[in-house]
Image 1 (tube, one colour):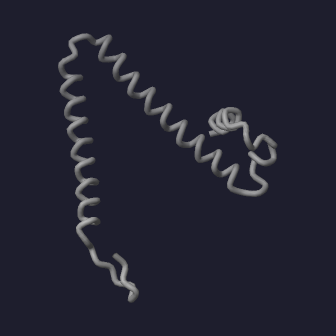
Image 2 (image 1 turned 90 degrees about the horizontal axis):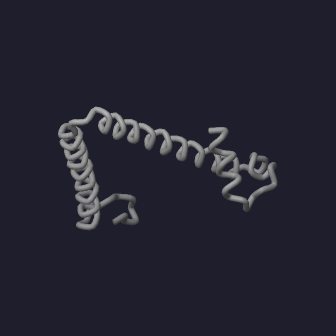
Image 3 (image 1 turned 90 degrees about the vertical axis):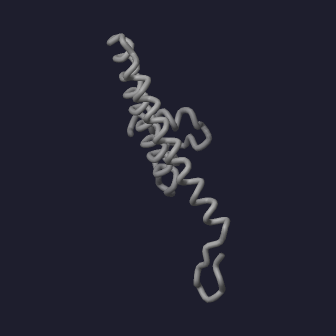
Length: 103
């Protein structure tokens, strides 16, 4: 809660939100441990290679999506951005593909 004098007070709601954030971190740590256990139990090198390549591919696709979305936001946020110069303000699939291409 923010008081009129500018001082902050932590209430039960803020503590609850903080606990939720920490619980998400614990779930992520458990997922990492589970993934490590599963990868240790795989006896086939081919399957292990396919799993690791899929994980790397997912990381690359996620990176391209985030940078493409950022590039689209930059192009749309200014008056003389590339989205408005292209003249295709409402054609989202085309604009997304263009931004991913240039990201």
